[in-house]
Length: 106
Ligand code: 5GP
Ligand code: ZN
Image 1 (tube, protein in one colour):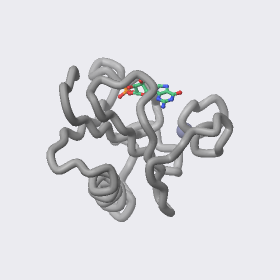
Image 2 (cartoon, rainbow, N blue to C red):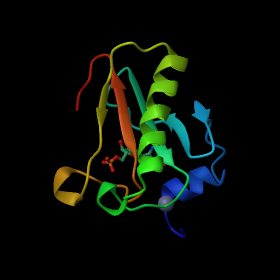
Image 3 (tube, helix red, strand yellow):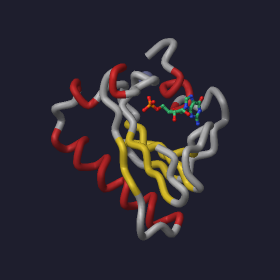
């Protein structure tokens, strides 16, 4: 989607390094980390928020991607966060799952 920062990242416009990528999602470091490790799991498909996603396969794949990413970076203990809607703190309107570990400030 035009003007979506995460779509641009997925399309490689900023040469963002991916911690992990698969058919369904990419994982990269948050630019403004709120913990020692702060990753974002982002579906390749533009979906505004969790409220707009009913695809059970994609929902499942996103959670599996969380596990793949945490395993890859060696995390056994971590927090996952999904902000849905402005009032809940969502700032980027392309669905993403935060992964946070170590000195979490969120
Ligand atoms: P939200 O508040 O929408 O749940 O989270 C958006 C997250 O995206 C924030 O933690 C913010 O730091 C991160 N973010 C915003 N723009 C960029 C960017 O251009 N690159 C990366 N890596 N993270 C971003
Ligand atoms: Zn997008």
